[in-house]
Image 1 (cartoon, rainbow, N blue to C red):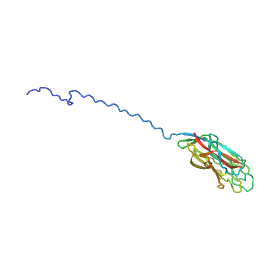
Image 2: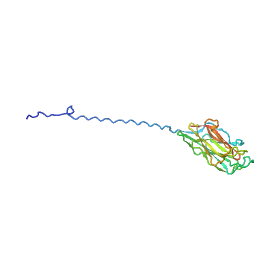
Image 3: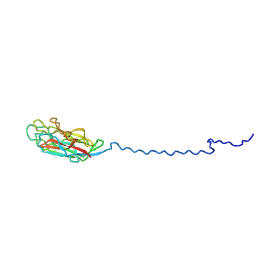
Length: 253
């Protein structure tokens, strides 16, 4: 048998001998930088609520024929009225002039106004700084207006301002008015300093329960645009005859 002339080799790559070069590894994929998070929508913006002008007295709420000299309860340039209370006589009262005609129901001997520094926030809420200030006026206390006891304090929700007031016993038949069953009306104020139109009546509990002879006043009806109360004028003889809201536009800065 004839010898095989030589060995046979097979290269599957068809390019000659040797091992293929390693396939290069792809470079790492670069991850995009994280996009910045948008700032929160409606970020809190706060402002301090103040009067934008001097207060203008409104109508008398109570005895419209009073001859008493007004005592002004003014909250000042940096605070606003946020609540009120009274001292109510413990017994029936006589006419404040001492005249005849019999007894009348208990009447308020003292009117107190609470003033506070009000801050409004962009989310529609409000806060009241502490301490608050209480200013008051009293009557002479004769003809049954004393002794007297304190009512509860009626306060507006935080960020709301006193803008109206109602009372009963204002003009009873035959005269001899008294000041009984009192409530305040609170106005919600926007961060633009303008009342939103939302109102809330808050009774002064303990100021009496008489429902006859009502009287009221509102800064919204004062003829002053966008007004709320900045103080209260109080007319007193033996007891409280009447009050008048002092109204002004507001500004929030």
